[in-house]
Length: 355
Ligand code: NCD
Ligand code: ZN
Image (cartoon, rainbow, N blue to C red):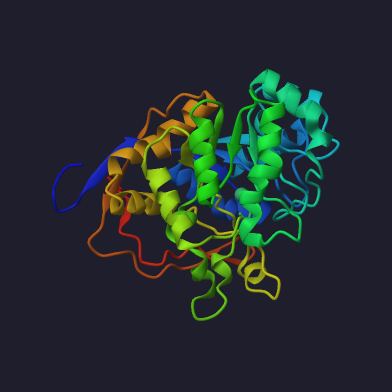
């Protein structure tokens, strides 16, 4: 950090270890925002027609590259969507060929476009065994789907019912517990991640809002995502974990664009679109916690270390602003649909510096 009036922070260019870029018009509208802040991103495979094979991942990657704005260096890291009938050979070959970086486990019906997800872990034992052998990471949406389990408990129950037994069967399997939201998840990852290949991503919105945000004066669909935001005490634990700089926690925005009409509906979609302001909001959280020196570990170093990738050589500078950012305008897709950006509870006090 340099001069006192405008604090600035220069860090290695970060990566986003969890994004939903969608396809078609939405992809073209949202991709420039992710590519502006992040050098690489782990691209989630939950398209309406999910990315279930290496071939599909390859053509999706081509579509993303074609949609990347000219002059911007951005590398999409592809994932494959696991189903009960995934072919382990295809997954391992896709990884060996450098097409697939990881595989994503959606428990069937856990979230957006997860109907083809895994119905029981036994169905993918062979795939997990092969991934463990190949050192290929498994990315986990960690919520049980049993309707009898309260929605606010689904992550904690997942740890005991699914994750612990799975890790017992596959102790060397590299696992990222995606978008964690609870004290239980933080405690589990902190303890286990110190001795085994287990890490977690944390989103900007789970660092900034608790579950009250969804009901502030009425129903607020743009604060609805999965896993759903939890109580304030969980948010506070997440902030401590993220800002600690500990290697098992890293940046994953889970930016998840849906059109305004799909969000503002009698049955609105889960997902928060944070790509435009995510990096600035992380800086704000770290600043408020007095932990700015740990931002680079969380945003730019811990992820590559887990994925065995080099840290980006380019740098990015963030600066604190005197006048918080004003109203956020929705972005528009090519066919005129609006996508509403995440509005933090208080306006952002950081931004990416232009020079
Ligand atoms: C994501 C989406 O819309 O694809 N939604 C969300 O609320 N996070 C899916 C997911 O990551 O659960
Ligand atoms: Zn997601």
